[in-house]
Length: 294
Image (cartoon, rainbow, N blue to C red; front, side, top):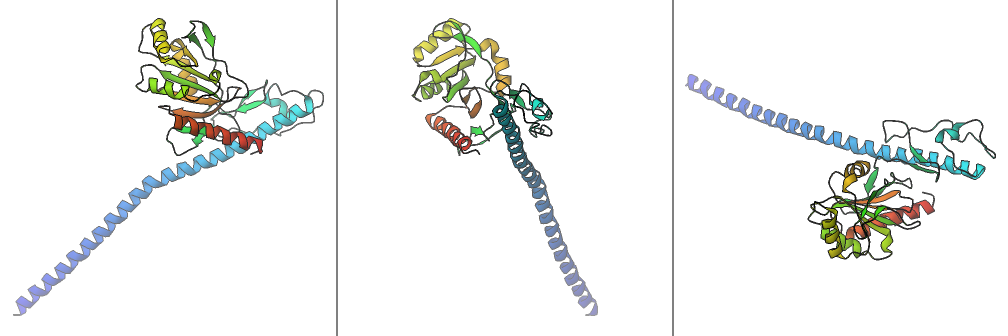
């Protein structure tokens, strides 16, 4: 009897210990899973927060540099030939500087510099700082009134006339520059969407950087069959430079620019009327921000 009771007691105790270990292991497993999920989530949240802070810092510093350029222009009647003039102790007639103690570093680039055009006074960052402008994936717009780099000079053959041309943008208008491939399955639909945009056809230009056709004549015949009202340029000979300058890894990519060639909005992938409207809305919002001094 005593032996049997002892055996039963030990059995019950062992079962209790086994249950306790099962609970402990479950808690440890859950804790490990939570820790792993947190380890994945925290770097993502940290990166997003860092990007937001860099964006804010980029905008504020860029505004400071741009405002100093504007004051320099107001005082002297010309734009500085280089940003270093903003920190000089003396300057041209009318100069009341220095306007900045030092040129703020650009947080969006490893180097401290900004791109600057002394003919227009435009301060820019060509690194491609884009933020979402709508719920449509692939449609992005400039994050501030600073431009995000200019369109590079694009030279090629006008596939309607056969002449060598440069892309020319219409001043004081929103221009659309399509960088694409006639081998892409969306090419014909893209051309139709651009044609349906309406307005001045001079504000739209399609640039072919990749082609399925071995000759310019064959590309010209395809474009003629499309009957689009805007200029289509064969720039396949300069594809690498154009794609590198615009960070286009897989055409098509469509850019909405102002008359000075500053890139204000971008569509990656297929072009539709809806996407064009969303991108244009981003440009309009940006223009209103500039007018309000934002």
